[in-house]
Amino acid sequence: MTALPGTDTAQAVRLEDVHKSYGRVEVLNGIDLSVEPHEVICLIGASGSGKSTLLKCVNLLEPIDEGRIVVEGEEITARGVDVNRIRRHIGIVFQAFNLFPHMTVLRNITLAPREVLALSRKQAEDEARELLERFGLLDKGQEYPDRLSGGQQQRVAIVRALAMRPDIMLLDEVTSALDPELIAEVLNVIRELAQSGMTMIIATHEMGFARDIAKRVCFLDRGVILEQGPPDQIFSAPAEHRTRQFLQRIIEAGRL
Amino acid sequence: MFGDRRGVVISSVSTVVFLTIIVAVVLTAPGTPVIRERFFDWGHLKGAFPSVARGFLLNVRIMLIAEAFILVFALLLAVVRGLPGPVFFPFRVMVIGYIDLFRGIPLILVLYLIGFGIPALYLKGLSTHDVVTYGIVSLVLVYSAYVAEVYRAGIESVHESQIAAARSLGLSRWKALRFVVLPQAIRRVIPPLLNDFIGLQKDTALVSVIGPIEAAREAQNYGAQTFNFAGYVVAAFLFVLCTIPLARFVDYLIARDRRRRLAGATR
Image (cartoon, each protein chain N blue to C red):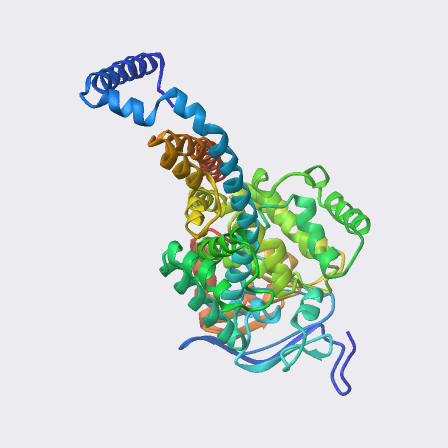
Protein backbone atom coordinates (compact mmCIF):
# COMPACT_ATOMS: atom_id res chain seq x y z
CA MET A 1 0.00 0.00 0.00
CA THR A 2 1.25 3.50 -0.65
CA ALA A 3 1.62 5.63 2.43
CA LEU A 4 -0.11 8.95 2.63
CA PRO A 5 2.26 11.84 3.28
CA GLY A 6 2.50 12.75 6.92
CA THR A 7 1.24 9.44 8.23
CA ASP A 8 3.24 7.04 10.29
CA THR A 9 4.08 3.91 8.34
CA ALA A 10 5.88 2.18 11.18
CA GLN A 11 2.66 0.75 12.58
CA ALA A 12 0.79 -2.13 11.00
CA VAL A 13 -2.57 -1.13 12.44
CA ARG A 14 -3.65 1.88 14.43
CA LEU A 15 -7.12 2.48 15.85
CA GLU A 16 -7.90 5.99 17.03
CA ASP A 17 -10.89 6.63 19.25
CA VAL A 18 -13.05 4.07 17.43
CA HIS A 19 -16.74 4.06 18.30
CA LYS A 20 -19.32 1.58 17.09
CA SER A 21 -22.94 1.01 18.11
CA TYR A 22 -25.62 -1.39 17.02
CA GLY A 23 -28.71 0.71 17.31
CA ARG A 24 -28.55 2.16 20.81
CA VAL A 25 -26.14 -0.44 22.14
CA GLU A 26 -22.65 0.97 22.20
CA VAL A 27 -20.22 -1.88 21.52
CA LEU A 28 -16.97 0.01 21.01
CA ASN A 29 -16.67 3.06 23.18
CA GLY A 30 -13.46 4.77 22.14
CA ILE A 31 -10.79 2.20 21.24
CA ASP A 32 -7.17 3.29 20.86
CA LEU A 33 -4.75 0.59 19.83
CA SER A 34 -1.48 0.43 17.90
CA VAL A 35 -0.02 -2.76 16.50
CA GLU A 36 3.60 -2.95 15.37
CA PRO A 37 4.62 -5.07 12.39
CA HIS A 38 5.16 -8.73 13.42
CA GLU A 39 3.49 -8.09 16.73
CA VAL A 40 0.99 -10.58 18.16
CA ILE A 41 -1.76 -9.01 20.24
CA CYS A 42 -4.36 -10.93 22.18
CA LEU A 43 -7.71 -9.40 23.05
CA ILE A 44 -9.30 -10.88 26.15
CA GLY A 45 -12.51 -10.01 27.92
CA ALA A 46 -15.98 -11.29 28.61
CA SER A 47 -18.43 -12.11 25.83
CA GLY A 48 -19.96 -8.88 24.62
CA SER A 49 -16.97 -6.78 25.59
CA GLY A 50 -16.40 -5.88 21.93
CA LYS A 51 -13.54 -8.18 20.85
CA SER A 52 -15.26 -9.59 17.78
CA THR A 53 -16.70 -6.26 16.76
CA LEU A 54 -13.25 -4.68 16.97
CA LEU A 55 -11.84 -7.28 14.57
CA LYS A 56 -14.76 -6.92 12.16
CA CYS A 57 -14.23 -3.16 12.11
CA VAL A 58 -10.55 -3.58 11.22
CA ASN A 59 -11.62 -5.82 8.32
CA LEU A 60 -14.30 -3.29 7.33
CA LEU A 61 -17.01 -5.91 7.70
CA GLU A 62 -18.62 -3.45 10.11
CA PRO A 63 -18.57 0.29 9.44
CA ILE A 64 -17.44 2.41 12.39
CA ASP A 65 -19.38 5.40 13.68
CA GLU A 66 -16.51 7.58 14.88
CA GLY A 67 -12.73 7.63 14.94
CA ARG A 68 -10.40 6.19 12.34
CA ILE A 69 -8.45 3.05 11.52
CA VAL A 70 -5.08 3.28 9.80
CA VAL A 71 -3.49 0.23 8.23
CA GLU A 72 0.10 0.46 7.01
CA GLY A 73 -0.15 4.22 6.82
CA GLU A 74 -3.45 4.37 4.94
CA GLU A 75 -6.66 5.47 6.59
CA ILE A 76 -8.99 2.63 5.62
CA THR A 77 -12.05 4.18 7.22
CA ALA A 78 -11.83 7.26 4.99
CA ARG A 79 -14.64 7.87 2.54
CA GLY A 80 -14.34 6.32 -0.89
CA VAL A 81 -11.75 3.70 0.06
CA ASP A 82 -12.04 0.49 -2.00
CA VAL A 83 -12.92 -2.04 0.70
CA ASN A 84 -12.05 -5.00 -1.51
CA ARG A 85 -8.51 -3.71 -1.97
CA ILE A 86 -8.07 -3.19 1.79
CA ARG A 87 -9.40 -6.63 2.67
CA ARG A 88 -6.83 -8.32 0.45
CA HIS A 89 -4.17 -7.29 2.95
CA ILE A 90 -6.11 -8.26 6.05
CA GLY A 91 -7.09 -11.87 6.60
CA ILE A 92 -9.81 -12.77 9.07
CA VAL A 93 -10.76 -16.18 10.47
CA PHE A 94 -14.10 -16.67 12.19
CA GLN A 95 -15.25 -18.70 15.14
CA ALA A 96 -17.61 -20.76 12.95
CA PHE A 97 -15.04 -21.40 10.15
CA ASN A 98 -17.48 -20.25 7.45
CA LEU A 99 -16.00 -22.46 4.78
CA PHE A 100 -17.97 -22.64 1.54
CA PRO A 101 -19.78 -26.00 1.83
CA HIS A 102 -20.34 -26.45 -1.91
CA MET A 103 -16.65 -26.27 -2.80
CA THR A 104 -13.75 -28.62 -2.21
CA VAL A 105 -11.06 -27.55 0.21
CA LEU A 106 -8.78 -26.66 -2.68
CA ARG A 107 -11.48 -24.55 -4.37
CA ASN A 108 -12.26 -22.83 -1.05
CA ILE A 109 -8.64 -21.78 -0.85
CA THR A 110 -8.06 -20.83 -4.50
CA LEU A 111 -11.34 -18.95 -5.12
CA ALA A 112 -10.20 -15.54 -3.87
CA PRO A 113 -6.60 -15.73 -5.19
CA ARG A 114 -7.98 -16.53 -8.64
CA GLU A 115 -10.89 -14.09 -8.64
CA VAL A 116 -9.33 -11.22 -6.70
CA LEU A 117 -5.58 -11.50 -7.27
CA ALA A 118 -6.18 -12.92 -10.79
CA LEU A 119 -3.71 -15.76 -10.29
CA SER A 120 -3.75 -18.53 -12.86
CA ARG A 121 -5.44 -21.72 -11.76
CA LYS A 122 -2.12 -23.54 -11.68
CA GLN A 123 -0.36 -20.90 -9.63
CA ALA A 124 -3.25 -20.60 -7.17
CA GLU A 125 -3.41 -24.36 -6.72
CA ASP A 126 0.35 -24.70 -6.34
CA GLU A 127 0.35 -22.07 -3.63
CA ALA A 128 -2.68 -23.65 -1.96
CA ARG A 129 -0.99 -27.07 -1.90
CA GLU A 130 2.11 -25.53 -0.42
CA LEU A 131 0.05 -24.02 2.40
CA LEU A 132 -1.93 -27.23 2.90
CA GLU A 133 1.31 -29.17 3.18
CA ARG A 134 2.73 -26.68 5.66
CA PHE A 135 -0.26 -27.24 7.93
CA GLY A 136 -0.57 -31.00 7.45
CA LEU A 137 -3.67 -30.92 5.26
CA LEU A 138 -2.26 -31.87 1.88
CA ASP A 139 -4.42 -35.01 1.59
CA LYS A 140 -7.63 -33.01 2.23
CA GLY A 141 -7.54 -30.87 -0.93
CA GLN A 142 -10.31 -32.76 -2.74
CA GLU A 143 -12.56 -33.21 0.31
CA TYR A 144 -15.67 -31.17 0.97
CA PRO A 145 -15.68 -29.21 4.26
CA ASP A 146 -18.41 -31.30 5.91
CA ARG A 147 -16.18 -34.37 5.62
CA LEU A 148 -13.56 -32.76 7.86
CA SER A 149 -13.35 -32.48 11.65
CA GLY A 150 -13.86 -29.06 13.22
CA GLY A 151 -10.14 -28.67 13.81
CA GLN A 152 -9.37 -29.50 10.19
CA GLN A 153 -12.05 -27.12 8.98
CA GLN A 154 -10.64 -24.31 11.05
CA ARG A 155 -7.13 -24.99 9.79
CA VAL A 156 -8.47 -24.88 6.23
CA ALA A 157 -10.13 -21.55 7.04
CA ILE A 158 -6.77 -20.22 8.22
CA VAL A 159 -5.10 -21.49 5.05
CA ARG A 160 -7.85 -19.87 2.98
CA ALA A 161 -7.13 -16.50 4.59
CA LEU A 162 -3.35 -16.99 4.19
CA ALA A 163 -3.73 -17.77 0.49
CA MET A 164 -4.46 -14.09 -0.07
CA ARG A 165 -0.93 -13.39 1.25
CA PRO A 166 -2.20 -10.99 3.91
CA ASP A 167 0.06 -8.68 5.89
CA ILE A 168 -2.17 -8.90 8.94
CA MET A 169 -4.29 -11.73 10.31
CA LEU A 170 -7.31 -11.25 12.56
CA LEU A 171 -8.45 -14.32 14.47
CA ASP A 172 -11.88 -14.18 16.07
CA GLU A 173 -12.14 -16.81 18.81
CA VAL A 174 -11.08 -19.45 16.34
CA THR A 175 -11.08 -22.28 18.89
CA SER A 176 -14.34 -21.47 20.66
CA ALA A 177 -16.48 -23.75 18.49
CA LEU A 178 -14.10 -26.72 18.76
CA ASP A 179 -14.15 -29.80 20.95
CA PRO A 180 -11.34 -29.61 23.53
CA GLU A 181 -9.25 -32.33 21.88
CA LEU A 182 -9.23 -30.40 18.58
CA ILE A 183 -8.08 -27.07 20.00
CA ALA A 184 -4.38 -27.88 20.15
CA GLU A 185 -3.97 -28.52 16.41
CA VAL A 186 -5.41 -25.10 15.62
CA LEU A 187 -3.36 -23.33 18.28
CA ASN A 188 -0.23 -24.95 16.86
CA VAL A 189 -0.99 -23.48 13.47
CA ILE A 190 -1.31 -20.03 15.03
CA ARG A 191 1.95 -20.52 16.93
CA GLU A 192 3.68 -21.35 13.69
CA LEU A 193 2.26 -18.21 12.11
CA ALA A 194 3.48 -16.10 15.01
CA GLN A 195 6.96 -17.57 14.68
CA SER A 196 6.97 -16.80 10.97
CA GLY A 197 6.47 -13.13 11.86
CA MET A 198 2.82 -12.66 10.94
CA THR A 199 1.20 -9.59 12.47
CA MET A 200 -1.85 -10.82 14.33
CA ILE A 201 -4.71 -9.57 16.45
CA ILE A 202 -6.27 -12.52 18.24
CA ALA A 203 -9.52 -12.47 20.18
CA THR A 204 -9.42 -15.50 22.47
CA HIS A 205 -10.71 -17.21 25.57
CA GLU A 206 -7.63 -19.44 25.75
CA MET A 207 -5.74 -17.60 28.46
CA GLY A 208 -2.84 -20.05 28.62
CA PHE A 209 -2.38 -19.64 24.89
CA ALA A 210 -2.60 -15.85 25.10
CA ARG A 211 -0.01 -15.80 27.83
CA ASP A 212 2.22 -18.00 25.75
CA ILE A 213 1.98 -16.34 22.35
CA ALA A 214 1.06 -12.68 22.84
CA LYS A 215 3.59 -9.92 22.99
CA ARG A 216 0.85 -7.76 24.41
CA VAL A 217 -2.51 -8.56 25.97
CA CYS A 218 -5.42 -6.12 25.91
CA PHE A 219 -8.29 -6.52 28.34
CA LEU A 220 -11.53 -5.21 26.84
CA ASP A 221 -14.37 -4.20 29.09
CA ARG A 222 -17.60 -2.50 28.01
CA GLY A 223 -16.16 -1.37 24.71
CA VAL A 224 -12.87 0.11 25.90
CA ILE A 225 -9.38 -1.28 26.38
CA LEU A 226 -9.29 -1.08 30.14
CA GLU A 227 -5.79 -2.39 30.55
CA GLN A 228 -2.97 -3.55 28.32
CA GLY A 229 0.55 -4.78 28.75
CA PRO A 230 2.86 -7.77 28.46
CA PRO A 231 1.09 -11.04 29.33
CA ASP A 232 3.02 -11.55 32.56
CA GLN A 233 1.88 -8.21 33.86
CA ILE A 234 -1.77 -8.66 32.84
CA PHE A 235 -2.09 -12.21 34.11
CA SER A 236 0.07 -11.94 37.24
CA ALA A 237 -0.32 -8.37 38.37
CA PRO A 238 -3.34 -6.74 36.77
CA ALA A 239 -3.75 -3.15 37.82
CA GLU A 240 -7.48 -2.80 37.30
CA HIS A 241 -10.10 -4.21 39.60
CA ARG A 242 -12.26 -5.44 36.70
CA THR A 243 -9.34 -7.24 35.08
CA ARG A 244 -8.74 -9.08 38.35
CA GLN A 245 -12.44 -9.95 38.56
CA PHE A 246 -12.45 -11.29 35.01
CA LEU A 247 -9.32 -13.38 35.54
CA GLN A 248 -10.70 -14.66 38.82
CA ARG A 249 -13.79 -15.96 37.01
CA ILE A 250 -11.60 -17.58 34.37
CA ILE A 251 -9.53 -19.32 37.06
CA GLU A 252 -12.69 -20.51 38.78
CA ALA A 253 -13.88 -21.94 35.46
CA GLY A 254 -10.60 -23.84 35.23
CA ARG A 255 -9.52 -22.13 32.03
CA LEU A 256 -6.17 -20.74 33.25
CA MET B 1 -39.64 -47.72 3.05
CA PHE B 2 -40.95 -50.78 4.91
CA GLY B 3 -39.77 -51.88 8.31
CA ASP B 4 -39.27 -55.58 7.66
CA ARG B 5 -40.56 -58.60 5.73
CA ARG B 6 -43.76 -58.67 7.72
CA GLY B 7 -44.37 -55.10 6.61
CA VAL B 8 -43.87 -56.08 2.97
CA VAL B 9 -46.39 -58.92 3.27
CA ILE B 10 -48.98 -56.72 4.96
CA SER B 11 -48.62 -53.95 2.42
CA SER B 12 -48.81 -56.42 -0.51
CA VAL B 13 -51.96 -58.09 0.77
CA SER B 14 -53.52 -54.73 1.56
CA THR B 15 -52.74 -53.45 -1.94
CA VAL B 16 -54.18 -56.53 -3.67
CA VAL B 17 -57.40 -56.44 -1.62
CA PHE B 18 -57.82 -52.72 -2.16
CA LEU B 19 -57.28 -52.92 -5.93
CA THR B 20 -59.63 -55.90 -6.26
CA ILE B 21 -62.43 -53.99 -4.57
CA ILE B 22 -61.87 -50.91 -6.74
CA VAL B 23 -61.81 -52.94 -9.98
CA ALA B 24 -64.91 -54.90 -8.95
CA VAL B 25 -66.83 -51.71 -8.14
CA VAL B 26 -65.80 -50.06 -11.39
CA LEU B 27 -66.66 -53.07 -13.56
CA THR B 28 -70.06 -53.67 -12.00
CA ALA B 29 -71.13 -50.02 -11.85
CA PRO B 30 -74.15 -49.26 -14.07
CA GLY B 31 -72.46 -46.59 -16.22
CA THR B 32 -69.34 -48.60 -16.96
CA PRO B 33 -70.07 -49.71 -20.54
CA VAL B 34 -70.85 -46.15 -21.68
CA ILE B 35 -67.78 -44.78 -19.94
CA ARG B 36 -65.60 -47.42 -21.56
CA GLU B 37 -67.00 -46.65 -24.96
CA ARG B 38 -66.72 -42.87 -24.69
CA PHE B 39 -63.36 -42.61 -22.95
CA PHE B 40 -61.44 -45.83 -23.30
CA ASP B 41 -62.46 -47.40 -26.60
CA TRP B 42 -59.31 -48.97 -27.99
CA GLY B 43 -60.09 -48.07 -31.57
CA HIS B 44 -60.63 -44.42 -30.70
CA LEU B 45 -57.59 -44.34 -28.44
CA LYS B 46 -55.52 -45.59 -31.36
CA GLY B 47 -57.26 -43.27 -33.77
CA ALA B 48 -56.68 -40.16 -31.68
CA PHE B 49 -53.12 -41.00 -30.74
CA PRO B 50 -51.16 -39.81 -33.83
CA SER B 51 -52.61 -36.29 -33.97
CA VAL B 52 -52.67 -35.81 -30.19
CA ALA B 53 -49.09 -37.05 -29.87
CA ARG B 54 -48.02 -34.69 -32.65
CA GLY B 55 -49.75 -31.89 -30.77
CA PHE B 56 -48.03 -32.94 -27.58
CA LEU B 57 -44.65 -32.41 -29.20
CA LEU B 58 -45.62 -28.75 -29.45
CA ASN B 59 -46.42 -28.74 -25.70
CA VAL B 60 -42.99 -30.16 -25.00
CA ARG B 61 -41.35 -27.59 -27.26
CA ILE B 62 -43.24 -24.69 -25.65
CA MET B 63 -42.37 -25.95 -22.19
CA LEU B 64 -38.64 -26.38 -22.91
CA ILE B 65 -38.26 -22.98 -24.54
CA ALA B 66 -40.32 -21.24 -21.85
CA GLU B 67 -38.40 -23.03 -19.10
CA ALA B 68 -35.04 -21.84 -20.42
CA PHE B 69 -36.19 -18.21 -20.47
CA ILE B 70 -37.92 -18.48 -17.08
CA LEU B 71 -34.79 -19.83 -15.37
CA VAL B 72 -32.74 -16.86 -16.54
CA PHE B 73 -35.34 -14.10 -16.28
CA ALA B 74 -36.55 -15.17 -12.82
CA LEU B 75 -32.98 -15.29 -11.51
CA LEU B 76 -32.45 -11.76 -12.79
CA LEU B 77 -35.63 -10.63 -11.01
CA ALA B 78 -34.57 -12.30 -7.75
CA VAL B 79 -31.08 -10.79 -7.86
CA VAL B 80 -32.37 -7.29 -8.62
CA ARG B 81 -34.90 -7.62 -5.81
CA GLY B 82 -32.00 -8.37 -3.43
CA LEU B 83 -29.80 -5.45 -4.45
CA PRO B 84 -28.93 -3.45 -1.34
CA GLY B 85 -28.72 0.28 -0.86
CA PRO B 86 -30.86 3.31 -1.64
CA VAL B 87 -29.58 3.63 -5.24
CA PHE B 88 -31.42 0.47 -6.26
CA PHE B 89 -34.65 1.38 -4.50
CA PRO B 90 -36.58 2.06 -7.76
CA PHE B 91 -35.33 -1.24 -9.24
CA ARG B 92 -36.47 -3.16 -6.19
CA VAL B 93 -39.87 -1.49 -6.32
CA MET B 94 -40.23 -2.30 -10.01
CA VAL B 95 -39.43 -5.95 -9.47
CA ILE B 96 -41.79 -6.25 -6.50
CA GLY B 97 -44.52 -4.58 -8.56
CA TYR B 98 -43.89 -6.96 -11.45
CA ILE B 99 -44.03 -10.03 -9.24
CA ASP B 100 -47.19 -8.88 -7.46
CA LEU B 101 -48.85 -8.15 -10.79
CA PHE B 102 -48.05 -11.36 -12.63
CA ARG B 103 -48.70 -13.62 -9.68
CA GLY B 104 -52.11 -12.03 -9.39
CA ILE B 105 -53.36 -12.18 -12.99
CA PRO B 106 -54.77 -15.53 -14.13
CA LEU B 107 -52.64 -17.05 -16.88
CA ILE B 108 -55.60 -17.23 -19.24
CA LEU B 109 -56.04 -13.45 -19.07
CA VAL B 110 -52.35 -12.87 -19.75
CA LEU B 111 -52.69 -15.19 -22.76
CA TYR B 112 -55.63 -13.17 -24.09
CA LEU B 113 -53.88 -9.86 -23.44
CA ILE B 114 -50.65 -10.93 -25.13
CA GLY B 115 -51.98 -13.32 -27.76
CA PHE B 116 -54.89 -11.21 -28.99
CA GLY B 117 -53.89 -7.77 -27.69
CA ILE B 118 -50.41 -7.42 -29.10
CA PRO B 119 -51.26 -8.43 -32.69
CA ALA B 120 -54.12 -5.93 -32.54
CA LEU B 121 -51.63 -3.13 -31.95
CA TYR B 122 -50.21 -3.49 -35.46
CA LEU B 123 -46.77 -2.49 -34.21
CA LYS B 124 -43.81 -3.29 -36.40
CA GLY B 125 -41.63 -6.05 -34.96
CA LEU B 126 -43.97 -6.62 -32.04
CA SER B 127 -47.32 -7.58 -33.53
CA THR B 128 -46.18 -9.93 -36.26
CA HIS B 129 -45.09 -13.04 -34.35
CA ASP B 130 -46.88 -16.36 -34.44
CA VAL B 131 -49.26 -17.48 -31.74
CA VAL B 132 -46.81 -19.98 -30.27
CA THR B 133 -44.38 -17.16 -29.52
CA TYR B 134 -47.10 -15.13 -27.78
CA GLY B 135 -47.99 -18.23 -25.78
CA ILE B 136 -44.39 -18.72 -24.70
CA VAL B 137 -44.05 -15.04 -23.79
CA SER B 138 -47.18 -15.27 -21.62
CA LEU B 139 -45.92 -18.36 -19.81
CA VAL B 140 -42.51 -16.74 -19.23
CA LEU B 141 -44.11 -13.55 -17.86
CA VAL B 142 -46.33 -15.41 -15.39
CA TYR B 143 -44.03 -18.22 -14.31
CA SER B 144 -40.99 -15.98 -13.87
CA ALA B 145 -42.87 -14.15 -11.14
CA TYR B 146 -43.32 -17.42 -9.25
CA VAL B 147 -39.86 -18.74 -9.90
CA ALA B 148 -38.26 -15.43 -8.86
CA GLU B 149 -39.80 -15.91 -5.43
CA VAL B 150 -38.45 -19.44 -5.26
CA TYR B 151 -34.98 -18.16 -6.08
CA ARG B 152 -35.34 -15.40 -3.50
CA ALA B 153 -36.19 -17.90 -0.79
CA GLY B 154 -33.04 -19.79 -1.73
CA ILE B 155 -30.86 -16.69 -1.70
CA GLU B 156 -32.18 -15.65 1.69
CA SER B 157 -31.56 -19.13 3.10
CA VAL B 158 -27.80 -18.76 2.63
CA HIS B 159 -26.43 -17.60 5.96
CA GLU B 160 -24.95 -14.11 6.19
CA SER B 161 -21.72 -15.52 7.54
CA GLN B 162 -21.08 -17.03 4.10
CA ILE B 163 -21.26 -13.58 2.56
CA ALA B 164 -19.05 -12.17 5.32
CA ALA B 165 -16.46 -14.88 4.65
CA ALA B 166 -16.49 -14.19 0.92
CA ARG B 167 -16.27 -10.42 1.34
CA SER B 168 -13.52 -10.74 3.94
CA LEU B 169 -11.39 -12.44 1.29
CA GLY B 170 -11.71 -9.36 -0.90
CA LEU B 171 -14.40 -10.71 -3.24
CA SER B 172 -16.71 -8.01 -4.54
CA ARG B 173 -20.41 -8.12 -3.73
CA TRP B 174 -21.14 -9.47 -7.21
CA LYS B 175 -18.49 -12.18 -7.04
CA ALA B 176 -19.62 -13.22 -3.57
CA LEU B 177 -23.12 -13.60 -5.00
CA ARG B 178 -21.96 -15.48 -8.07
CA PHE B 179 -19.50 -17.90 -6.49
CA VAL B 180 -20.77 -18.32 -2.93
CA VAL B 181 -24.43 -17.38 -2.56
CA LEU B 182 -26.11 -18.39 -5.82
CA PRO B 183 -24.60 -21.89 -6.15
CA GLN B 184 -25.79 -22.76 -2.64
CA ALA B 185 -29.14 -21.02 -3.11
CA ILE B 186 -29.95 -22.73 -6.41
CA ARG B 187 -28.99 -26.15 -5.10
CA ARG B 188 -31.43 -25.71 -2.25
CA VAL B 189 -34.37 -24.66 -4.43
CA ILE B 190 -34.08 -27.31 -7.15
CA PRO B 191 -37.03 -29.35 -5.75
CA PRO B 192 -39.45 -26.38 -5.60
CA LEU B 193 -38.18 -25.24 -9.03
CA LEU B 194 -38.99 -28.62 -10.54
CA ASN B 195 -42.38 -28.43 -8.87
CA ASP B 196 -43.09 -25.20 -10.69
CA PHE B 197 -42.05 -26.84 -13.93
CA ILE B 198 -44.54 -29.62 -13.44
CA GLY B 199 -47.12 -26.84 -13.23
CA LEU B 200 -45.66 -25.14 -16.30
CA GLN B 201 -45.81 -28.32 -18.30
CA LYS B 202 -49.53 -28.68 -17.63
CA ASP B 203 -50.23 -25.02 -18.29
CA THR B 204 -48.79 -25.27 -21.81
CA ALA B 205 -52.21 -26.74 -22.66
CA LEU B 206 -53.80 -23.38 -21.83
CA VAL B 207 -51.85 -21.80 -24.68
CA SER B 208 -54.35 -23.45 -27.03
CA VAL B 209 -56.89 -20.70 -26.20
CA ILE B 210 -55.00 -18.27 -28.44
CA GLY B 211 -54.64 -20.71 -31.30
CA PRO B 212 -51.71 -23.12 -31.31
CA ILE B 213 -52.78 -26.65 -32.17
CA GLU B 214 -51.23 -28.56 -29.29
CA ALA B 215 -52.31 -31.79 -27.59
CA ALA B 216 -55.44 -30.47 -25.84
CA ARG B 217 -56.65 -28.74 -29.02
CA GLU B 218 -55.98 -31.85 -31.12
CA ALA B 219 -57.96 -33.88 -28.60
CA GLN B 220 -60.80 -31.39 -28.86
CA ASN B 221 -60.72 -31.63 -32.65
CA TYR B 222 -60.84 -35.42 -32.49
CA GLY B 223 -63.76 -35.25 -30.10
CA ALA B 224 -65.63 -32.81 -32.35
CA GLN B 225 -65.26 -35.16 -35.32
CA THR B 226 -66.08 -38.44 -33.58
CA PHE B 227 -68.17 -37.51 -30.53
CA ASN B 228 -65.67 -39.48 -28.47
CA PHE B 229 -63.49 -38.36 -25.57
CA ALA B 230 -60.64 -40.81 -26.13
CA GLY B 231 -58.49 -37.96 -27.47
CA TYR B 232 -58.62 -36.21 -24.10
CA VAL B 233 -57.66 -39.44 -22.37
CA VAL B 234 -54.67 -39.83 -24.68
CA ALA B 235 -53.61 -36.22 -24.03
CA ALA B 236 -54.01 -36.65 -20.27
CA PHE B 237 -52.01 -39.86 -20.43
CA LEU B 238 -49.17 -38.11 -22.27
CA PHE B 239 -49.05 -35.25 -19.75
CA VAL B 240 -49.01 -37.66 -16.83
CA LEU B 241 -46.34 -39.72 -18.53
CA CYS B 242 -44.09 -36.67 -18.47
CA THR B 243 -44.93 -35.31 -15.02
CA ILE B 244 -44.61 -38.58 -13.08
CA PRO B 245 -40.88 -39.03 -13.72
CA LEU B 246 -40.35 -35.36 -12.83
CA ALA B 247 -42.34 -35.77 -9.63
CA ARG B 248 -40.37 -38.90 -8.62
CA PHE B 249 -37.16 -37.05 -9.40
CA VAL B 250 -38.23 -34.24 -7.05
CA ASP B 251 -38.96 -36.83 -4.34
CA TYR B 252 -35.54 -38.33 -4.86
CA LEU B 253 -33.83 -34.94 -4.59
CA ILE B 254 -35.70 -34.05 -1.42
CA ALA B 255 -34.83 -37.41 0.16
CA ARG B 256 -31.19 -37.04 -0.83
CA ASP B 257 -31.08 -33.53 0.58
CA ARG B 258 -32.51 -34.71 3.89
CA ARG B 259 -30.01 -37.57 4.09
CA ARG B 260 -27.20 -35.11 3.53
CA ARG B 261 -28.42 -32.72 6.16
CA LEU B 262 -28.79 -35.50 8.69
CA ALA B 263 -25.33 -36.78 7.86
CA GLY B 264 -23.97 -33.27 8.32
CA ALA B 265 -25.71 -32.83 11.66
CA THR B 266 -24.08 -35.86 13.27
CA ARG B 267 -20.60 -34.54 12.65
